[in-house]
Image 1 (cartoon, helix red, strand yellow):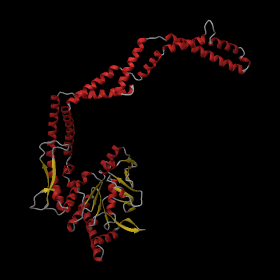
Image 2 (tube, helix red, strand yellow):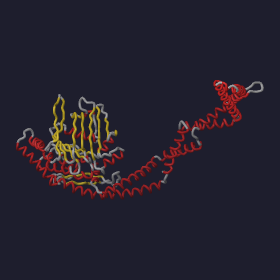
Image 3 (cartoon, rainbow, N blue to C red):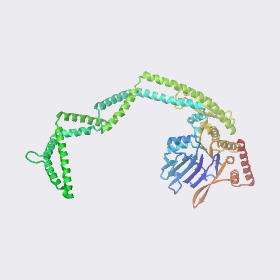
Image 4 (cartoon, rainbow, N blue to C red):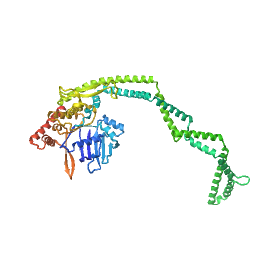
Length: 566
């Protein structure tokens, strides 16, 4: 349920904070005072479409925040878990900021989400119905979902089996259609993948192989230069018959300084430096000698390296810019090839699988139809019972199943539509085509009364759904809305005193002009204030003692009615 609502710079509302409780809450006030604006704000928190036109004149952005609590086993918390949003304290705070630029910022418990996610969660929280918002009743394609919501656990179990089988059937059917339609393309793709996999695997490519081969090629191609440099370097260090090498000369220098190293720290440092240099030259001489011994020219080896590098360059031109990318591409096409080869089932086998799955689908679809027809009879009876309470006792309500010629849909094999006969003697016709506004309001209330338990929505909002009715029908609607509030929190905007009297909590909305700006205020009414407001709703501008007595009587009657239901 909605516990607290905070609105800032939204339409004509500068700042408004209000707390709500469980049960039935009504909002009353003069037309244009801002009652529907408050409902619009709740609708935006539930993911409704936002617009920069909602931002109050002179402000940069509108801010709406709502605090909600839900049953622990409700679907709202389940969705929060799926979204990874924390709700340990049992409270969920929805916040939405609408900027004048048109940008929207949505948060759930402080986590940024997009409007689609907010709407997905909002559908489990708030159900808003206005006098012109009976979409589900006016859209025949939504009637099947409404019927299923009234269904039993058995229906839901069969529906689950059907949906799982339908997905498998669609997958097999798609495979067959794809194979038959694109047989040539399929075969060409298969041949190409096999060729590519073989080409890359035959190359036995190794990571960083190109860099290693390039280094070996460079050594072979510069053999003479390398050999000359190594020979000259070795000769310079070791000397020959005509000249003494640097190694012997540095050895003599080391021996000379070693003889005086103990006489002065400076001599000792020079001796150590020459000793380090001598041994370093000795190591270098040994390494040069080793490289000279290993150095050999192999013309065939150079040809092999060039050929191998050419193979790698060809693979890079086709499959990637590096060995790593080529090998990664290989893994990708090997998986695709394996999937395609696994899918290469003989057409007879695929036909057999598809036929078997279709038989299962037909079985579950027919079971679902039988169960839905049982449920539809119960729904018809339940709705006509509710309509009787709403002074539509002569109305006939039917759930009609249309012929589908055994077609399979994602929802089953059924196409249904609600039909209505408002008055005896009239032809029964589709609800969407003949129901008046008042009839739709009462039908919607009948459905809400029946579905308020099964839908699990914690807050139901009625925005002037009682427009166009009066007298005993108005009283019946009031009692029906109050009954719905036994299952879910109800917020209701009304101009009917009968509906307002049945509420558990009553807020009065008015607007004032302050500093040339319109400001909306909300006030919770106590018992005395409620009597005055009901009297205003009954009489209009002139409230008499008789009107006040009538208002008090209306409240007393509502109290007795609710006490009798308890």
